[in-house]
Length: 330
Image (cartoon, rainbow, N blue to C red; front, side):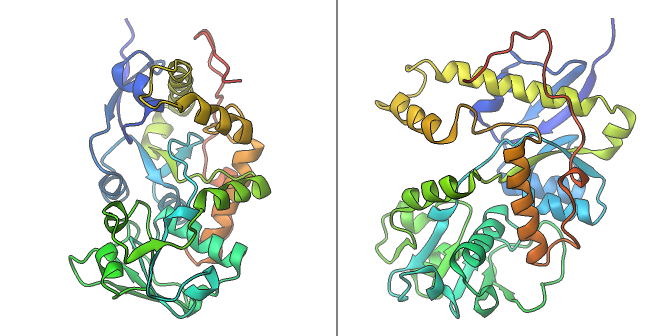
């Protein structure tokens, strides 16, 4: 009996990988030890600084920088985390900010400079709304995953140790914050903090209709040592992730699976706008355009040395599984 290859796979605890976690979907020839209990910042740090896992979901922005700098990692075209980001620009309601251009000259807090959400938002603000990013005083909350020198022309400094930029925003020490998660003051209903785009969903839908981009936040990276010794791992892990996603779609077709009264209505609205498989994997035309946008933002903001082609960052895989009872989301 052939021995399976034992690999650790660190990722978020998502519905689309549930079948990999519970073992109802397996990767051919691989015994995946799914590690889903850590927060994303810890996972990214541990992989990029210590190479602690064999396979890991990573910040797309930090991964682009890692690959550009020659770190021994290669991504497979599996995208476990996507999110529209217009709703993650938060403002102090007394700062006089009513439009994106009002951010110019202001003090803006961010989690880290490299966070994909923050990279994407800076790109949107500059490209879609004409904001001059160089006029902003940037304050980072945490140390970045990949050591780097601040890009020329930007004012970047650390917030005081132990201070959360959300609290600094509420207290008026910052005028705005770009952040990957919903800030605590917003969750608490603190009236001192609001969103730049009050109707952010309308802004996001308009952006998608215009660009067809559902922003990729994270990629899935494999240590090069694994791929050099077992090149088939790239395809087999990618196929397993695809089967797990399709299994999730099958479960979600059952209206009892999610405790929301109008869940299927929301799902139908999403399918009407975005098609049957918004979380599509592989280097499809839509994903290429999405990744080229992110690569362009990264190069334009001085994080990578050149706008490499998409193929520079990704291993070639055959995503079409065979003999596993394929199910189409369409």
